[in-house]
Image 1 (cartoon, rainbow, N blue to C red):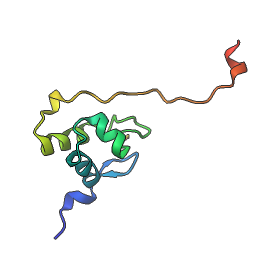
Image 2 (cartoon, rainbow, N blue to C red):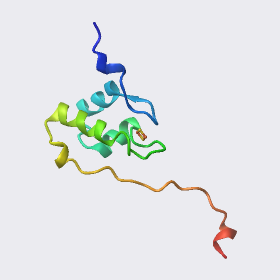
Image 3 (cartoon, protein in one colour):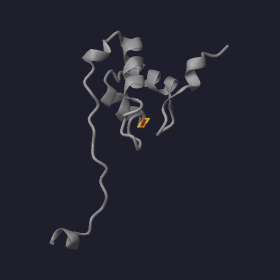
Length: 89
Ligand code: FES
């Protein structure tokens, strides 16, 4: 019987599963930002407001690093293209 956790979505915005995050951690992504770079978890519309703790908990379970010791994920403000002429006002 397959592990029920494998198909659980941990990042709803990017539809990243528990299995994908665990695989990234086992391959060396031991920070939330590293998991984000490998899997895209946390890069969605909510910018990890919903999934941060899910990802941190999985890293804790796989590595033993306390969630309180994990460096918070870097947030970037969504950027939209702006015409050069619009900057001259
Ligand atoms: S739930 Fe992960 S970025 Fe929104």
